[in-house]
Image 1 (cartoon, helix red, strand yellow):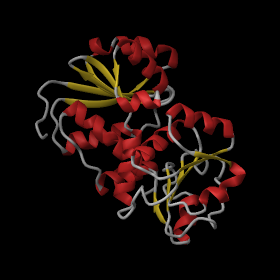
Image 2 (tube, helix red, strand yellow):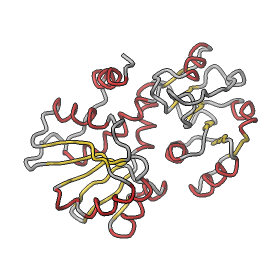
Image 3 (cartoon, helix red, strand yellow):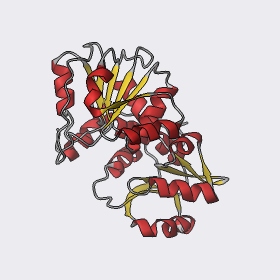
Image 4 (cartoon, helix red, strand yellow):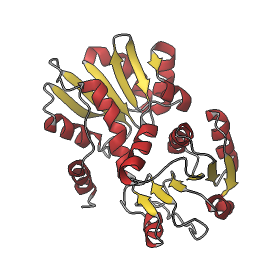
Length: 287
């Protein structure tokens, strides 16, 4: 689809806080490069207690959509479930990151899993999710989307390691997927014969505690990815690269998850390019 909208299309990203969001940079870049007329994408700081009231005014404010980040993803899901619509991905994850105005009302979607898988396809050209077991580090919100996406892609064996084992077990039960759950001290067992390792925790992020893992049990032909993108190359990725593993940084997930929303709001499908990556890396101070 290549036609640009003729009416004003206003989209926002909502969160609390929201100053850190790079979404306006991403979408404004696409709006400009694709020549989408009468379109805008801005930040909107919304306190948790004000979210529902803000959503109730969306039509009056002239919005055609939104991205939603912490801490609003679950609250938005519940609001949509009661009054509007959610797609299959959002329903499974019980969280919404993309809001789209449709002829039937507001619809909530979750594009995190899509963004994760698209990044693997982009950065790991020869990666096959069905090659072997995948080990997921962490059992938080990001982990839910990634576990669901990998299961849908046909990973033959899912493995999840979390410091609180019961939280990982709850995640597995809640998603309805088949997975082996490991104690954090059992990472060596989880890595044995694995084809993919994914860090979904905030460990290793700038300002956070380091992620300390021993990759020696991991096959050297396995792929390693990290959802952290500041720093772009985390200690985990540096360690993996040094021993010969394929690696994918976390920036691509952020960029690719934005594609479906942009297409839904503005009627044209954007591409994740090196120019866009460089733009965001410069803003992060990584280029």
